[in-house]
Length: 135
Image (tube, rainbow, N blue to C red; front, side):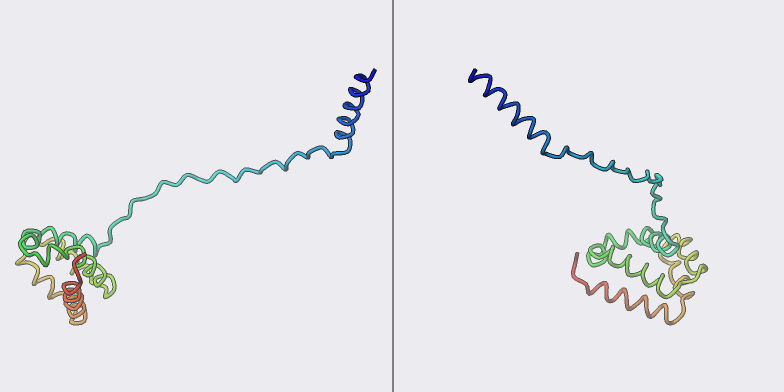
């Protein structure tokens, strides 16, 4: 009989625990975020300044390879020239001229198309870049 009492007592405790403890509530359903529209990232399109300066570097590559200072700072010089071009607003005629140059002898005609301020800015940027420590 004692076993029966213990079993009943056990069931009473279990039942009491079930009745006194609030039932767990269902969590609010998580509202999924709306599916985003898949957008393909577009590759960055080079500006006219970048294309022209990059072409100049291709034409100048043999000279750059023969000069340690230029070779070590090639990216600094390129970035400075592009920044100057964008900042001072080189004209389409000048940029097209640089894009069409086939050898270094053609650079002077293109450089002459820049205004005095643009030429001074370019020369200062190149001088500053050559003073920079090697990256």
